[in-house]
Length: 244
Image 1: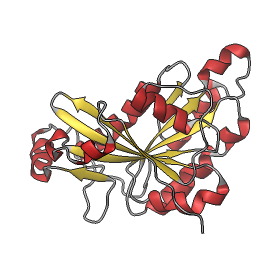
Image 2: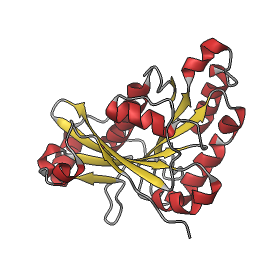
Image 3: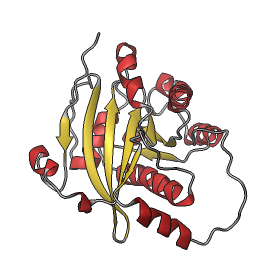
Image 4: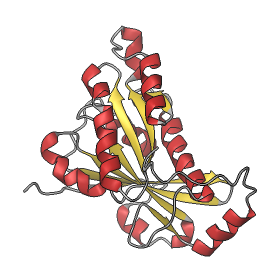
């Protein structure tokens, strides 16, 4: 059995892991668990390092099992979310380890390398696998075409039109990004965080006992916030689709 190696790489405004553990929970109102999905070497870890630490390394060790990152984000004035990222290994031999993290995730970044046709073709498989394992919970996704900086070199193997078509089929937004240049990295992660937050406010995402996809420091405040929102319609929710 492969040993799960979880690396504590918490970048919380320059605070180290031990100090972060002592922080008051009032620093955040919500916690979202986000899982990184995609083949090995597509650059999932590079994207996370750029987003959480604003760093890019030409050479980065492959993820073994699952790595762990934390970042804080203000999704609207006065509402801070703790984003807890699970960076999964893309190799098949670690799949039994990474699958155990699907169920307790509320969001997923589906990442492919725009210079690798096969990584793009495997996205449907990653999406289907997560949807199967999260039932009866729901995961919201963003599709990311990584290494957009390579387009200038003529190495792009997946067109924007193809990727947007796939995103439309999966019912998710699409973003092209580059950890090397920083292009659209922040936008990709924060788009997903906003999708989850809006899903929580609308009731598409529900807090459930025993599920760690979303945690709320003040559930009663969430109920009051929901009640204060003006709903555009009273159409019944579609409970058949687990993912989006």
